Image (cartoon, rainbow, N blue to C red; front, side, top):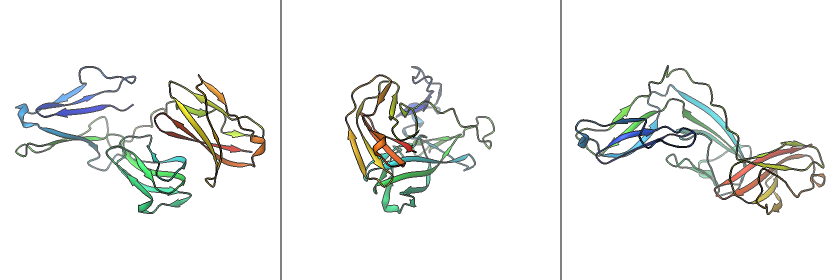
Length: 239
């Protein structure tokens, strides 16, 4: 539910609220100095000035191939405190992070968990090319900024498994919502070994994977689904 902030040369700084995945033609908040020539906006940055509204979260991305990128559910994240690959803390060379665009590139294959921090009440910094006026900082004064709000209700994902724990012989059923396009899927065991690859036809809401789980041993498996926009990792356990 990301909002949009923008600006320009000799243009106001503006924020457009995301309401049901759309934006109004006019901004919900706007500001400019007097005269407006004093703002030559170069960049708008969301951050946490006082470091008093941090929230820390650990997100499990499942198995990730070396060289692939993951995107945390929260944007923007302002700090990464730990990256775990295959159950061990990753070395600095094992991943790359782009704070501006949000992606984390994983350089070593394995199960990936990332612990990151973000602000529930981010402040807004507007950088200004006009050195005579300097940059502008807008403090977030929404309510008591020293109290962390409850987490928002998580939206239903575009792809999910009907059941994440199955008994031997049960079918793996994939659920889809919206217009997401699926290209292919692959099944991996917990060690990262690829067991099978599937071509998935376009379907409306549910699809039964052409896989006999009775031929698999009990354990944890990762279903990596390549969509038209990004890979999705789904974890399942076979009893």
